[in-house]
Length: 585
Image 1 (cartoon, rainbow, N blue to C red):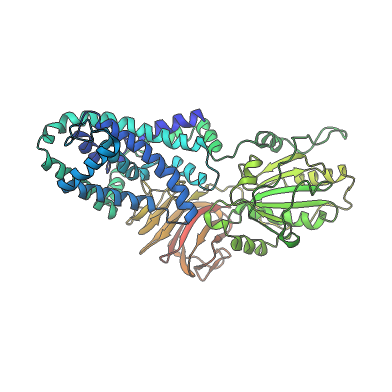
Image 2: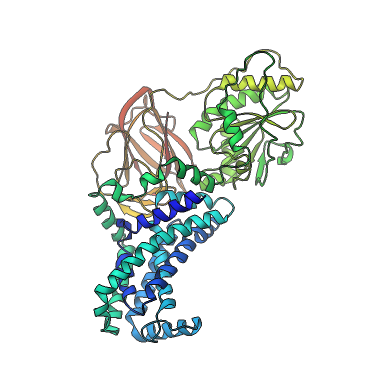
């Protein structure tokens, strides 16, 4: 956690020197140049506190109420606009500042003769809301994931350290700016009105997304390390591990079962058995159960005497979907002989928390074993899990004996099931289960990516950030990269098509999948392969006559080639189609 807090501080300081800070910098400099000598300190204090609140508390509120993800940006614009108009009306500004001074018990600014610390905190608080969209992708991802989990002091400390890092850099910039701007401040009310006008202009520019366009224009000509100064630090193993801690993915049996997953199933000698990794955690804080008598919850204590396989999955994950045929086959083969499979549905995207969506996915995939809905990732965290899919093998005494993360090794996993059943005195008769399933293709070069700003990777469009953007018509993407065209509304976890939207990608794979949704009603998306409507012989299962009809929020199959090949795929969605994540097989 200490490393992650340090990362937050350094990332915040780096952000204060990046193009992202341009809309904030002139306001901070002008506001810091007026008032007493302690006003800049008040500004940075207000910025750090309000930024922390904006990226933690408000994110939780927005997630809980189901509000739009760009609400913080809209709030920032409203605060800036109101503050600027206030400064442009000197009598109103004086009245508000006098009220704040009396409320704080201290002099607030130049008009009341004090050092302006408390009036500076008001300015800083407004800047904190404006500054929130500048949060780096990794920090944004952490806060987004945190919004689906319980609040901890660690998550608060990370956001606060990020705000403090930015505040320290801005403080020194303001100290230098005061020497330049201070002579102008002697003109009093006129300068204050001018600074208010600056704030109003910036607010209106943000309203028209001109700040983002300006950042994009600059970023397209800057080296990558200047566009995202923290990229190298974000990619280090130590920070990645600490980020996993913040997400709650370590703890419980995490380390032990990670070791279990790395061990081979085969042992030397007939006397060697599976090791014991500790008592399995219970199913906790689940919202609903499916495929149980009366939809009543199960407990591991109640399943003592049976071998239990716990499978963590989510229905839009292609790796999970390719595992399901094996699980359903094992359920049919070994259930009567003493095996209980329990699927723990732990969502990655907000729409996967919808019980009706989960129920539909269970029916669509022919799942007959029990499934627990783990919307708050409580059971996930109890196991210290980090992966989709992940399987934990529990013996008849309730102890974890083996774990496996990801796809593959199905034959050896079935050996574990049979061995644990034999230990329980229920040795299965006959051979292994027969399974027909889709396997991943060797030689795939294009890794998965997300469409939302928090985790988007390998996009040629610079400075992806929440809000509506007109990406124009960029050059075709290089190998294994992606490019937005036209207008898109970007949030932290998704991208929604607007007028003229298109998406290009250069992929090396056999199959292409994309998680899509179309809230409200069905919408269409054209699919082009190398600039031409995709032939039916190469189209995925969800493409008909070169078109995908998007309705339910789920994983859609777009391309199904005879072998791994390299092509350019172009998607032309109707306005309102929302995309979440690409995967390849």
